[in-house]
Image (tube, rainbow, N blue to C red; front, side, top):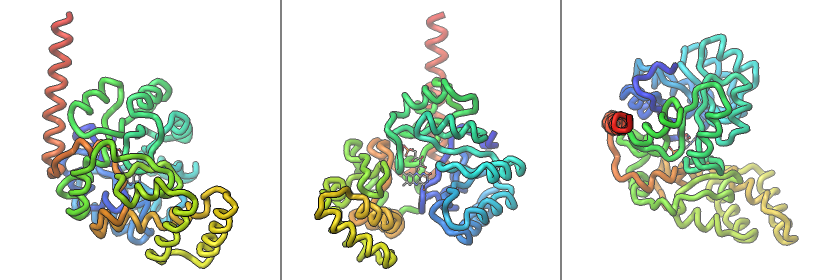
Length: 346
Ligand SMILES: Cc1cc2nc3c(=O)[nH]c(=O)nc-3n(C[C@H](O)[C@H](O)[C@H](O)COP(=O)(O)O)c2cc1C
């Protein structure tokens, strides 16, 4: 369906799935998704063109409906005959219709069965189903359970995501009935990934137990490496979260006057013992800058590192080609094992 050589998707990751990584993934036989949800429309169009200049293999883009200039991005995709789009919040039916008429494949990422059913009903051609082990924003059901429940309930092809890194994972997902695997963290930890080396080293030394979900970073369920900064946010009480949010607002100077007003409201709400929502929304406004601190500027200790738990099992930074070749070699080994077991038991 996607026109790639192997049943492997490189997923979108803000500031990581940039043209070089996407082209390297697609050139190696996988299917890369360009992360455009964190880009403005002009930058998004430039990134599509840069990727087209680096590969003649098919690739897709990830965006979301509510970002500024989403309609320009949609038109850019259609004009450039980009193969596929991914999203986690569904575009309106008109946009989906426009994609379908232009032959663009719609392959949203979902983290819960109800979202899978809704996405199929809205016209998705296939689904990436991400279990809770996965990096970035993630749900609460582990990949194995979510995958089998979605496979039992939808008719469109399903690609498994969350916790994959090798050929045995690919074999397992196909055995389950999925059409392939989608990986974020594993592709982020490659030579072509643009993440600065100091940050890649922090990922290489992360422990599986220390890559956890917190809702306090941006108000959503977000799986991140718990460095000291994120651990402090996760442990925060209303007072300390208020202080952290003020400090980060000051540091990143991204907030409008109304956000400072919100902070004052938060302060009084905190004194009254109300909930954390306003400090939380300030943290959320700053979260892109805090992620970029680690992923773009190369300061892992001061920033946030979205990560799948699988980073705890990854100890190298191969090229995309070596990674795909290795996965397919391991897959052949697993498939030969399946055949042997079948033969022995017949
Ligand atoms: C560093 C990082 C950034 C991510 N950014 C995005 C994003 O911008 N949009 C998105 O839909 N998913 C994002 N994700 C989720 C991935 O696309 C993917 O679904 C997830 O990483 C799969 O799980 P895995 O990390 O175990 O392979 C991100 C994940 C990571 C690790």
